[in-house]
Amino acid sequence: MNTDNANIIFRGNSLTTKALDYFLKVAGMQYLHETLMPLIRNIASKFSKEAPEVDPARMEGQAVDTVIKKNWKRLLEQVGLIWDSIYISAATMPRELVKVFYLIRTLILEKYKDERHIYPAISAFLFLRFFCPAILNPKLFDIMADHPEPQVARTLTLIAKILQCLSNGVTFGVKEPYMVEANRFLERNTDRFSMFISKCSIITPEEHLDLIQLQPQIGPIAHIPSSIQPLNTYASARVTAMEVAQTIASPLTRPNQMDLRRELEAMYRIFYQHMTALRELPPSEKVPSELFAHLNSLKAAHDAYDGPLQSTGSPPVP
Image (cartoon, rainbow, N blue to C red; front, side, top):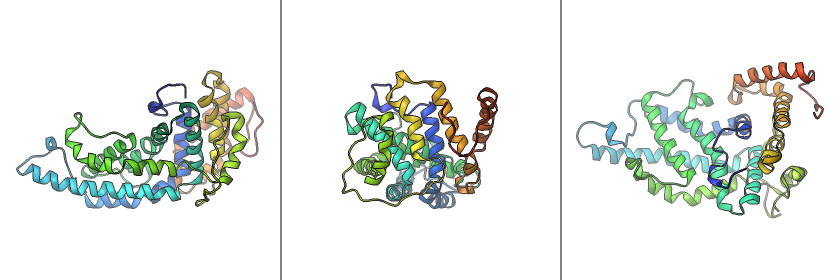
């Protein structure tokens, strides 16, 4: 977090963001499917012949204004359905994800002393790297068996465009004037979006006690009121939030003291320890095959340099 501009945190590609990208896919794939799959498949069926186009430059014929007005109604209906499903899903988000977002929330408050910066940091993962890519490319997230037809793809693009603006806290303007009709939806849901991010980054008192052990890496953990009641728990035998948190904590809080070799080694060990469990995940939560190829290459290099590393048990600290 070596920047004074809180709005660009986690928006680029780095060791930290790549680790969390994989973590989102491993711990959150079933949650993503439950939240988006029925709606996206319904869109694929409903708009296979004609997208609810709202850009007059893409339209031909007469009565364009009338058609656009009708299409806006159809488009915003689908945006509303997907956004409502995402908003409600805060109650069933895997606890492993919530713990990581809580850690990010804590680090943001510690550095910037302003709660407003929490929302762009967390939304950079949930929307920029998770929800919106899944809407744009449903096949890559196993939501659809094939890539969507052109009209469906256009519909999903318009939906993702609106949701991305919602997560960025901005409205449409001169760059895309044909989209300004969505601004009323964005303005109506600004407070709801903040509530959603808050719900996704607040942990229970019991989970707070578990995170106390991270204090040497991330400093004081913010107090959690005892009145907060536990939500649904998410049992995970995979890469845990605690392990990911330990991986990201040092470069976030002490960027000038980061030992790159040690951090890379730590992240490699986390993933390698869990290779067996990752390979045994059901199809709905499968990990990209290229990850295993990279890990095998890293293992060969590691074995040649430091000796074999076991995939079970606790590895020695380098």
